[in-house]
Amino acid sequence: MAPIENSIDQLQLLHSISSLLTTSLNLKDTLSSIFSLLEDHIHLKKGVLILRDNYTDEYYIEIGYGLTEKDRRKSVFKVLEILTSKVLESNQVERISEVKSGICNVPMDSDEEMPGYGIVCLPIVLGEENIGTLSVFVPQTTVDVNDRLGLLSTVCLLIAQEIKLKKMLEIEKEALRRENVLLRDELKDKYNIHNMIGNSSSMHQVYESIIQVANSNATVLIRGESGTGKELVAHAIHYTSPRSTKPFIKINCGAIPESLIESELFGYEKGAFTDAHDTKVGKFELANGGTIFLDEIGELAPAVQVKLLRVLQEKEIERVGGLKPIKVNVRVVTATNRDLESELVSKRFREDLYYRLNVFPIFLPSLKDRKTDVLLLAEHFLDKFSRENEKQITRISSLAIDLLTSYQWPGNVRELENCIERAVLVCRTDTIQARDLPPTLQRSDTSLSVSEDLTYEEMVNNFERELIIDALKKTRGNKSKAADMLKTTQRIIGYKISTLQIDYNKYKGRV
Ligand SMILES: Nc1ncnc2c1ncn2[C@@H]1O[C@H](COP(=O)(O)OP(=O)(O)OP(=O)(O)O)[C@@H](O)[C@H]1O
Ligand SMILES: [Mg+2]
Image 1: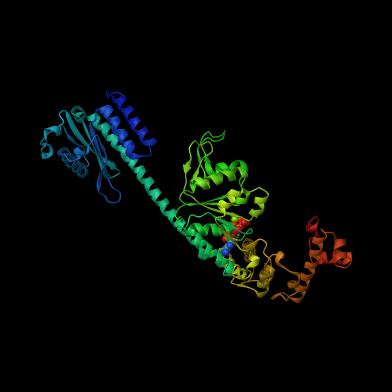
Image 2: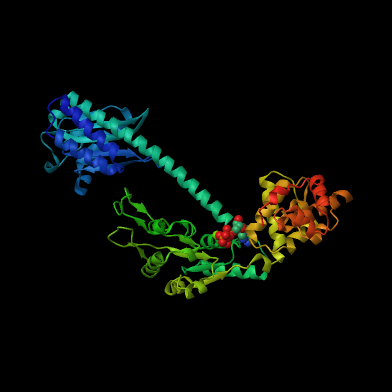
C-alpha cells in the first residue's frame, strides 16, 4: 500500500491492522506485521512495544521492531526508558520532535542521532489500566501532525483489545488446564490398582503383573472372559505407569466397521477420499506420549492387522492418504476374550502380529474360579450403589450370600455388578434378601429354604409359582404340556395360573 495521504488511506490501514489481529493467533507475529504495515504507511523506522507482565507486574519489551542488540545498549534506549516511564505515569502521549543528543538530558553519540526523525510514545490502556506503551520512531512530520497521532492512538486501542482477548483466553486456558489436572488425578485415583477388588491368589498375581509391567513400555495382551475386568486392568497399567499424565486412548476394534477402522487408528489427510473434507488425527496420534488400548483386538480385520504390525515395528504411523510417516511414542495395551491361538490356526489372526502383541500376557481369572472374591465384590458394589441411590442398605442376608456364591457367573464381575445394582433398586429394607436377586440366581433347592420375612403361605405360593413358571418356560407357554410335565391336570394348572396371577402368555414361543 502507498504511504498515507488522506483519511481513506488511514481507514484502509486500520482495516488491514484489525484483520491481522482477528486472523492471527500469535500476538508476537501479528505485532511484527503491524509494525511492518506502519513502516510502509508512516515510514516508521523503529518501534517498541512494552507490556506489563500479568504475573510479575514488571514491564518488558514484547516487540523491538527494527532494534538491534547494539541499539539496546545505546543512549537512545535510555531516552525510550525515560519516555515510557513518563507515559506510564501520566497516561498522556509524549513526543520528541528530533532524535539528537541532549533530549531528555541524555547525551548521544553522533551515530545514534536520527536527523529528521522524532519519537512518539503512546499509552496502551485497557479500561482504566495502563498496560504498556507503544513507541515509534517516525519522520518529524508525523510527530507533529495530529491526525497521525489519532491513527497511532487507534492502533494502540486495537492492540489493547487484542491483549484483553488474549488475556481472557489465557485465563480460560489456565482454568481448563487446572480442571484437566484435577480430572486426571480423579481418574488416577479411580483406576488405582488398589481400587481393584479381589483377594484371591489369582487376583494377586494380576496385581503383581500390572506392577511389573507398568514401568516398562512393553506391549501387554490382557486375556479373560467377558466382564472379568480387562478394561480395568488396562486403565490400571496406564495410571500406574510413568505415562499416567499423558492420554489414555481406547478404541474398540470390534465396534468400528472394517472400512473405518484404519482411519480411526491412523487418521487421514484432507482429500484422502471423497468425504475427507478436513485432516483427521487418528487415535495413535492422539495417544502420543501415553497409552493406546486396543480392545477386542481379536476382531481386527486382517488388512488392518498388517498395518498395526508395521506401527509396532517402526513406531511410526501413516495417515490414510498421507505422504510421509509420523513418529509416535505410544504404549500399546490390547485385550481379547477370544481364543487367539485357534484364530491363528484358522488364519484369522496373523501369527507375526500375535507374537508382537503377546510380549506380556496377563490372564484374568473367571469369577467362578475365584469364588472367595464374590462376597468382597458384592459388598463393594452394595456400598457403591447404595450411596449412588441414597439408600441405607448395609447387609446381605445369609440366604442371598448362599445364592451369590453358588452361582456360576457366566458374565463374571459385570454380571455381579448388574445383579447388585438391581438388588439395591428393588430392596425395601436395610438388607439384600434372596428375593431381591434376579431369577437366574434362584435355584429350586434354595426356593425350598425358609425365607426370613415371608409367611408360610407366601413361601408355598412362591414355590408353586416357580414350579409352574419353570414348566411353562420349558413348554413355551403350553398349559396342557406344562400340566403333563408336572403330572397334574390342565384344570389345576389353569386354576393356579389364575390364582397365582401368572402371565402365561409371556412364555408363549419362548425357549
Ligand atoms: N476386580 C474388580 N474390582 C472392581 N470392579 C471390577 C473388577 N473387575 C471388573 N470390575 C467391574 O466390572 C465391570 C466389567 O469390567 P471390564 O469392563 O473391565 O471387563 P472386560 O473384561 O473388559 O469385559 P468385556 O470383555 O465384556 O469388555 C466394570 O464395571 C468394572 O469396573
Ligand atoms: Mg472390555
